[in-house]
Length: 128
Image (cartoon, rainbow, N blue to C red):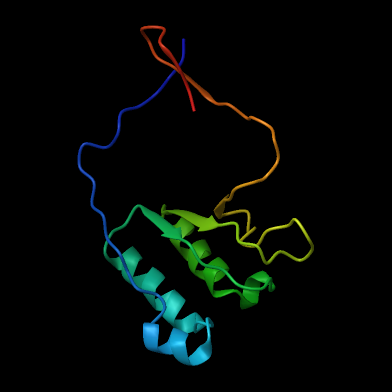
């Protein structure tokens, strides 16, 4: 039948500030790439299994994008990197954070349903 796995018995949650409030205030929303990379490095050193980044910016080449670079290193170390899709893609209705090693998460306004099913060994079926 189907397969599912239980939640981890022990979970460590950690938060790292990538953008200082003072800098955000002075620069009106811009953040420094060095701040983002430093926060990602700190999370990797702390032993995190998942990095979730809810930030982005205008599209840029992979080699110039701090999120893409930091994510590549983290994925090489076995860490899942999840980023928000954002609204700054290269054209209307497109997204950012699209490097193939990043899990990009976003929302859509289409009126469609894409259900996913978890079927347990006892034949219980759950829709997600």
